[in-house]
Image (cartoon, rainbow, N blue to C red; front, side, top):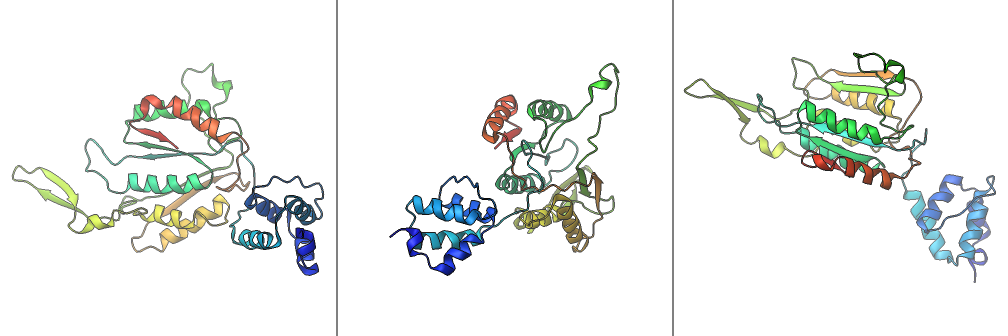
Length: 292
C-alpha cells in the first residue's frame, strides 16, 4: 500500500499544516528536491511527492520526527558568499609567546565553518605579510558578500588617502583595557636572571588551561554562536557574559547600520569554487594562511 493509503486522516491533516520550511527540511532528509507550486499548502505537495517516491509510512513518520530535531535559524538575508578571516599572532619579536590566540582562532574557525563560512586562518605574520595576504583575498571576494573590501574609485586620482571604511552593516566589537588582560586567562610568571634579563613563562600548573575557548571573550562567543540570534544581538549577549565574568573587562561594540544579519544566512554563490580560488591565490603564503 502507498504512503497516502497508510496514513491516518489525522496524520494527513497534520502534514497539510506543515510550513514551507518544515517541508524543505523533510525533503532534504529524504534526499529529494521538491518544487512547491502550492505555497498555501506545501505539505500536500510534500506528501504526494513522497508517495510517488515510494516512501513507506514508517519511513515518513521517522522523517517527520527527525525534522523536528533539526535546528533552524532565522534568515535575514542571502549574501553571495560568506568568508571569515581569522588573524592570530602568538609569537612576537619583543614579547613572550601568548598561549590562547591560535587556539581561539582554531575554535572559531571550526564553528564558523559549520555555519557555512569559508574560514581563512592567518597566523604569525608581519604587518607587511598580512596586508599582502588580505589584498589577495579581497580581490576575489564578490560583491554582496559577508566580507568585502570597499574603496570608491572617486578617490583614484588622490595619491594619499585614508582607508575607506564600510559604513553599512558593519559591527566592530572587542574587549580590552589597559588595566586588564583582554585575552589571556593564564598566569604568566616573570623571572629575572643574574644579568637582569627578564623572562616570562606560564605559571606552573597553568598549562592545563590551554584549551579551546581559553579566553573569556572567545569562550562566550563559541558558547553562543549556535543560537538563533542576529549578529548584533549575539554580540550584545557575548558582551553581557564578559561583563559578568570573574576577570572584569570592558567590552565595546560599534554598530554601523541597522539591517539585521545572521551568521547562518545562507550564501547563494558557489562556495566550493570560491574556496578553491582563495586557496590558489594564497598558496605562496601557506606557511601562514590556511583556507578551509
